[in-house]
Amino acid sequence: MALRPLVVDIEMISEPGRLSGWVLDVSGVLKVYHEAPESRDANEFIIKTVAEKLNIPRSRVVHLKGFSSRFKKFKIGKDISLDELCKALDAKKGQV
Image 1 (cartoon, rainbow, N blue to C red):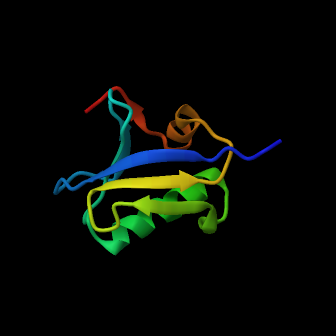
Image 2 (spheres, rainbow, N blue to C red):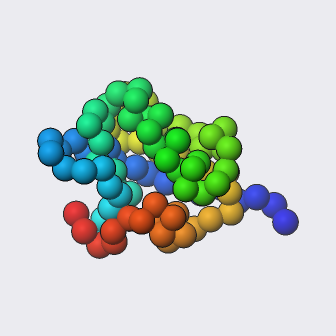
């Protein structure tokens, strides 16, 4: 069976005093709260977190777009749905 990777849009949001966390908003965009949403550290945070939660190598989480923007696109090299990804990340659903 052929691998069908998931391509997901992720928005990095900075809110002082808020703990890191994941939210799937009503438009289907996955949002993550991080201290510095437009930094290289934020990109590495996404790659590391997704790889660890899915138990896959970091090389299977590829940053496609938005390297210096808060709006990013990643490809996850695993047969997984957006719902399964949200469950693995413990993302809250339907909130903005």
